[in-house]
Amino acid sequence: DTSSTDPISRAKRNRDAEEEPVIVIEDSDDEKDATPTYLDCLSTGKWLNATTIDHYFLLIQKACFQDGVRVVSASFYQQMDAANQDVAGKALNKVDLDGARVILIPIHEPKRHWSLIIINLNDETILFYDPKHLVKDWDQVIKRVTSTIQDLSDKPVLHQMGSRFALGFYGINVQGEANNVDCGVFISGFGRHIGSGMGSPEIRSEQQVESMRIKMKDE
Image 1 (cartoon, rainbow, N blue to C red):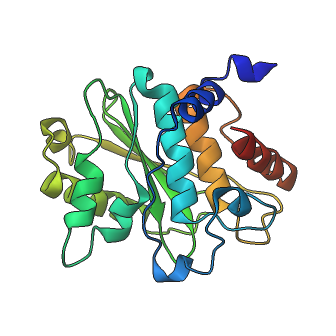
Image 2 (cartoon, rainbow, N blue to C red):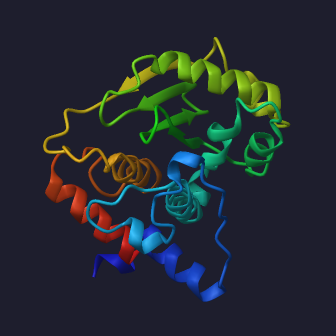
Image 3 (cartoon, helix red, strand yellow):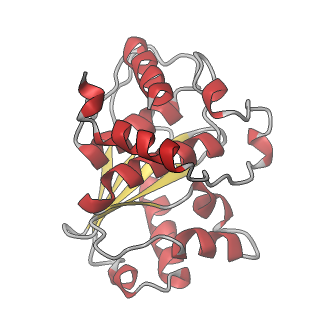
């Protein structure tokens, strides 16, 4: 039984035992048609809304906290361009960066598409992962995110970003993603790989997507 050694599965069991509350954020207008429950969103053909993405990425963070993995809520990117940036600032500054090595930031752009920013503080790199190559101006998205982080963060370590950090793009040629609803599953699988080193970093087929949905349900 690999679940006994899988850090994310262990974290899930510990979380359930402690009855730790899950942070839930308000979905944007274009997400309100998505099924709100975590398990329903993980059914075949369902799009993962922001609450589901946050739920799973917080599980990754808890499992890999000692390895320096930190997660910023999806609400940060959703609200960072708002006139009032209080929500974005709170989402950013609640993250405990003591001992942080990698920061994962789910990105929702364009409409109904998920990608992921991975900030590696040790290597001074910022990687943009887009499973469908839909974000053509990914470098500009990174620059907007890092500029906002520097403006809103109360953590000195994040003020070091900008011109010092090298930017990179990671995309794959996905086979069979015709339904346009699996992008959240792709970034969850990639985030899981970055955090725990387990699983393949590249989900390329519908069968692998379904396997990841099942794994997310079980964890």
